[in-house]
Image (cartoon, rainbow, N blue to C red; front, side, top):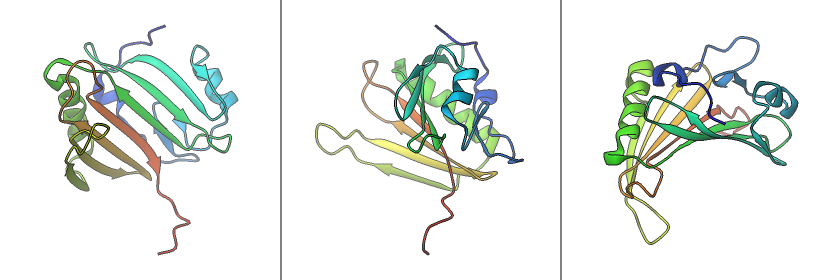
Length: 160
């Protein structure tokens, strides 16, 4: 089942932290699987992951949404965009993120090495307690996904 079309700029909005930190759309860090099931009853539920297939990001772009719950509560959300001609969807998502969040915190490129690693560009934004990591694949074509976007929270238990 396809979900409603959302403008890319709305899809990529992570609202300011209130009582809970919103990672993506209406998915908050720490939500239970049951809470997510109420919001997305047609999603596929696995032990530590909930998958929303073919989420309509824009008129031309779809993504699979992977909601990770390794300890029984939402820890991160990853969107995996499908292939697109000339990586148009990756362009659309990157432009929406730049418009919404401004200058990225970091930007780097990774060379493709070997059969399992593709050349990519990694762009990171930090906003309202949420880290957004946008990975744009620079090779691959229609048969491969052209982008990924992961929403996570800052890990406060790091010993630095």
